[in-house]
Image 1 (cartoon, rainbow, N blue to C red):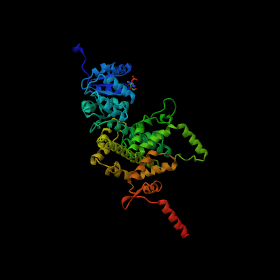
Image 2 (cartoon, rainbow, N blue to C red):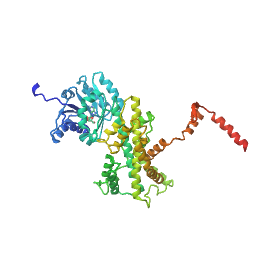
Image 3 (spheres, helix red, strand yellow):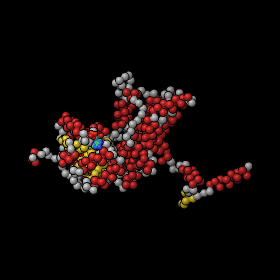
Image 4 (tube, rainbow, N blue to C red):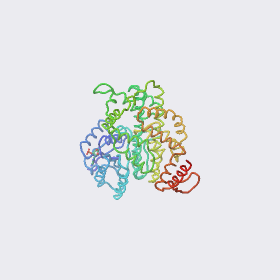
Length: 496
Ligand code: 2AM
């Protein structure tokens, strides 16, 4: 029997929804024999069929957790791609019964980082290692090269380094994977990646809205513009797919498909976690937060329709939000491109600062430049722009904000006039641009050496004796504001 038993697989993957199937096929295609398993057997068969159809790939299907685990070479590395939350716990329980000390479980789902930290401790009791690995790039990325963000046991990472380096997307400066750090850092980084992705999508949607609503541009023109933008500083996956979206006709009627889509955005939760974490860590992330708020407001479709009606009855002018006559389209397009780029820099500055704050809190020692590098390919936010971020952190690993990197600072200053024109036009025309406004306000607040926070401190001290500091010397002060004000009031009254 021994002689005929099949050779052991290099790695295993459990959870064969489309992402899992695609990642397994990708691993097999890179030359690593892989074992696969799924709770429901039909998906194992489906994956086996695909492995044959997609080039006789070295993939073996298994129908029980035990048989699956025992088919993998030790120390075993098993990737699981099941729904986040309790399905992960159930899958770990099913597999870990058959695993041995030194073996490793790698959760590739969008898991809350604290769940990963709990599981690291839990499986450690059995001597098992654990990684929480962010996987970005959607179904296509999983199949042909994702961006991978593994965090947790470094020893476990070393066991799969050869595999993930081949499976990840490849860019000119290496594969889009790196060991992120300890604990739940891989999941956390993926979460912030998704928050940044929300911001990018919101900013692109606002660019579309301004060009369409104020500029009166057609979908065909928008397709051309986004294609052109994709050949310059905005070159990115999201800009590229946006151009393509504008080219698609409605198969079930007249006109373009994009115009037929209900304006209600879905979401799965990582954007919300990002904003919650920003609040927890006292890091301002207004662009990312505004993109989340916009998704919430978009969900209130019926309320928004009723609001439009109510405000019309209240006398809201019809021409608010209408195409502006006599607009210089060419200039508007150029301005919007610059506004989009400058807004994006501020959004990434927020995301990176959130990562740094968490890294300090958790002592993860995150390498921000390296994170920008592994996002250059494979993932949804992949963009030429990320190379500039990588270089900014190479120049100065302790950069306080991307905004003050000399190159980015110059770019922001060059673009600020156009940026202000776009936001001004949108505001005066009633076209909501919460992302661009949030970015511009972030920029203006951050770059101003003096803010009106002095007044807020005075108010706090007046009603709550919270004390304040002075600009002209150290110390903590409290003033009897009301008494003094009354005195000066009576003084003024006496003068009169
Ligand atoms: P299924 O095909 O048996 O439903 C995405 O839903 C993936 O997660 C699927 O592969 C699904 O398996 C798996 N999954 C969901 N809940 C699970 C659970 N409790 N245990 C094991 N796998 C689960």
